[in-house]
Length: 319
Image (tube, rainbow, N blue to C red):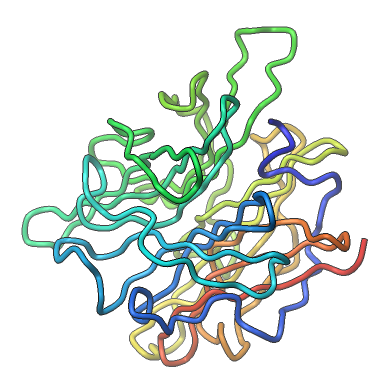
């Protein structure tokens, strides 16, 4: 299971070239308002992408966003799958859900960790928590009771869950969950023996330190490396010099490396800068998968000058 998700043999580094075409356009009845937060999982026959969408045919008037899916044989041409995979509702996720992260389970099936949001009275304040659901086929999902990571007066979101090597000491945790701590504007981690009850680890993985991440650091994509250590890609946002299409912030994707998964050293370079036709305002929420030809592809949410959100991608050079 260690190599089944969030794993690459070698460090992809920071060299990415933006792809010409969009991966997912926000042009359907369920996602024409926005397509966000991609998470791609290799499955039999190809790849499935889970992403947040919202559109005019939202079937639940109380929902302000849900999880959709698309399938591809090559991680290049995507076919949107009908219906909604997960809708908002339930503890910790009454009004919004997004940022899915799907992992295969050892006894078969899948678990989806995702960020839920619940508006407080008057709709002025929103709290976020990480909740979960399970599925036998990756299409039909059932919500699990309780909250995976949440606390009073705290907001957590944008999860990524990795399998850890328990080694010879059976007391070592089996799972590590990386998450955005929005209340502290930093990226933190938590561990679990069963994938359901997580305990925060001490310290901070990534804090706001650089010029282009002065507003927020969040949405970690973490890869365990076969060569040892860990690679993280994360989003950094900064206040925009001028507001365009209602956007007060610019977003970019940055990278960091860690020997132990806890102490991280940031790269000097920007991995994915904004400024293209799809991401003139923001590039955010990265997700990485390997391709059949040895390259890697990084999917991300992209916001253009008109404020339209779609899912774009970038590809590494041949290894």
